[in-house]
Amino acid sequence: MEILQKNLLKLIAEKCSSHWQVNVFHDHIVIKLPDTEKDFKPAYREVKKEITACVHEHLPERNIDVLFEVRNGSWNCSFKLGKTLTELKTDGTLSEKDEPYEAMAHAKKPIEEARNK
Image 1 (cartoon, rainbow, N blue to C red):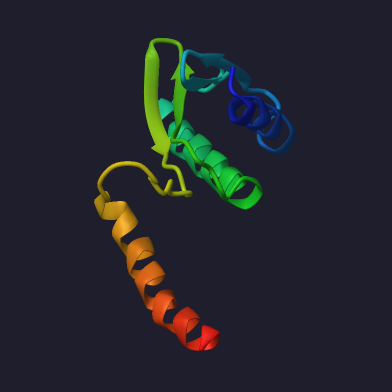
Image 2: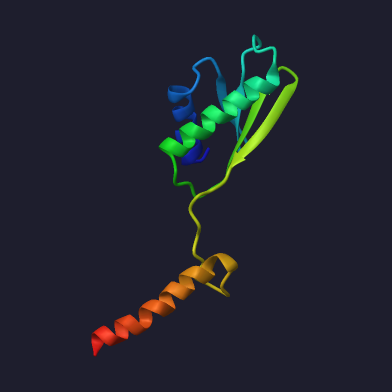
């Protein structure tokens, strides 16, 4: 289990509803709602809202996508919180994500050359 997933499990258990069962299955964090939740769709929306707010508040910088699956009996829905940190590639050709960083590097070069003169 990845460190981020461990931190998320602990965070959800502490900050979100304590009556949820929280586990990891492969790369998903699974939230199992109590069987007392009869109306799944509103419960799912509330879980998603609560988890999203909690993760954005306490772990705003993530370098991986986090996948969640909410279950209740035979019902299940999933959602993803995308990574917030981009990775700058240093080998090979530039990707589209790297172009702004390359532009910043080109802009800095003349300034550095002027300082050295």
